[in-house]
Image (tube, rainbow, N blue to C red; front, side, top):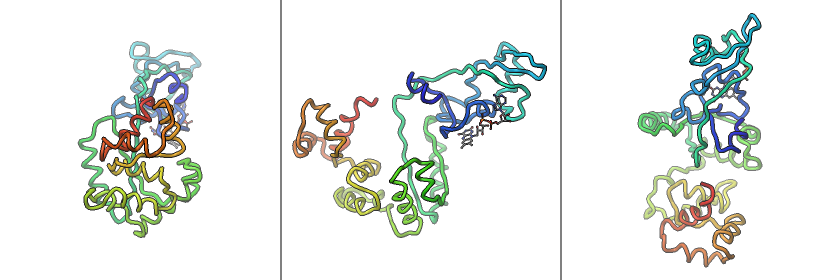
Amino acid sequence: MADALDAARLAFPLGHCGNVAVGGYLLGGGLGWNSGQWGIACHAIESADVVMADGSLIRVSELENPEIFWALRGAGPAFFGIVTRYRLRLQPSPRAITEAAWVYPIARVAEATRWMQACAAVMPVNVELSMAMAAAPERFYRDVVRAGYRGAYLRTLAAGVAAGEIELESLRIAAPDELADEEVAERLLTLPGVGPYAAAHVMMLLGRHSRLILDSWSRPKWATVNGRKASDATIERRFRRYGPYAGLAFWLRLTEDWA
Ligand SMILES: Cc1cc2nc3c(=O)[nH]c(=O)nc-3n(C[C@H](O)[C@H](O)[C@H](O)COP(=O)(O)OP(=O)(O)OC[C@H]3O[C@@H](n4cnc5c(N)ncnc54)[C@H](O)[C@@H]3O)c2cc1C
């Protein structure tokens, strides 16, 4: 369903995992993607066709068999009919979706929880916040996160942070005049599995936008956007006027057609 909707630039608050089937999900209420803004999934059911215990096939909606419609939206496994068809109200696909994940050592769980509670009280309805405490094996990163070969690196990194062997907080906290962008990049590059491309993206997440992400994807993309190829030095010169935001300006130019 997600794929079909995506192709039509439509959306629905589907379950957070791609394998959640809609049949039982809608009966149970359905707390899915962007529920804060779009509401719970069952409230987007316009009507349904239901086979009742006596074998009759009925349509239920606000106007037709409203009591059964009421029960259908939330009864879950207790629902007394069999739904053969749902008609759903869809949403226009969001123009962009972004996500950020932060990992903290277990010693900071109380502090992180307090911070999340404070954020939850003020954040916009279209932001989802979730917290997981996990000691996951490598296969979790491979099979669930689908991080491919990066799974082993993520696991090593998470284990290093949890054990207090890798300290990342100072990279976030330090102001640019205390810790220059070059120094942050150098430290990131020492982490397991972090190369120039990953380092440049993490830098942007950290609010450090000076460095341009120049790699085997961005160089040819720039050639397309710019109309001709250019050396790294020429590209850097072109964006120098944006100073501490040069990398961000470059990235936004490259990804203009994503929105
Ligand atoms: C990995 C995972 C992630 C999940 N994530 C979310 C989430 O993000 N948000 C959320 O709200 N829930 C989530 N769930 C819970 C999920 O909504 C329920 O497990 C739901 O029941 C799945 O639907 P199903 O069609 O597979 O139901 P089943 O497990 O097949 O059935 C559950 C019950 O619903 C009844 N049922 C199913 N289809 C019909 C039908 N057509 N007519 C009548 N009765 C029917 C069945 O008889 C059964 O009693 C998640 C579950 C899993 C396993």
